[in-house]
Length: 174
Image 1 (cartoon, rainbow, N blue to C red):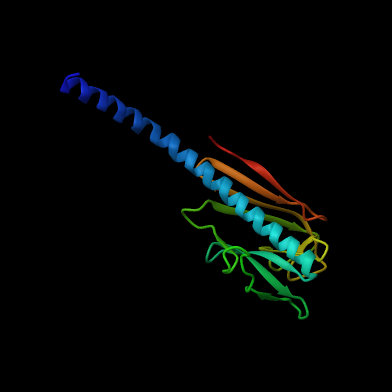
Image 2: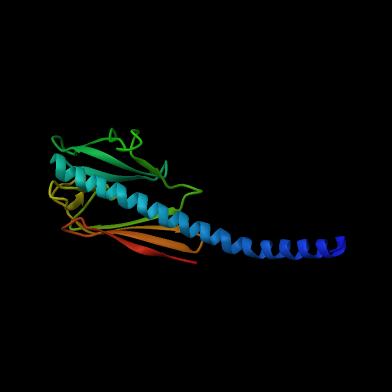
């Protein structure tokens, strides 16, 4: 093989690699969406299960300013309930918080309630695992959907009313 042939082969391989870059980028985005949906599902399951186990309300709280989804504990002995951000990730042993700002997939939160909820970005769970408005214990969640998007990739987590069952909707994309 001559030097010219080698350069031609390397040029063809370089062009093929450049053509694959957009496809690989979107595959990486789809994987990031899948991973984020799974992390949030695990956090929601942890909050729901801790509420059941400890017989005290735990919640998911989305903080728009920091673009973070946290697991928090509620002290419902006061009105409105006091939010305690002292919940630790059981494995990492640090505050249970999931960053959702760039480069992580963006969150779109949609929650409807049976009544007025002054803090719709706080989804709490009763001792039986039922989702409700964390600042208004009598107001139940009618439906909750957390959707994540990165590029063309989309994934969602739905929290069922009444039971708190978690349902992952597969991410769309490549």
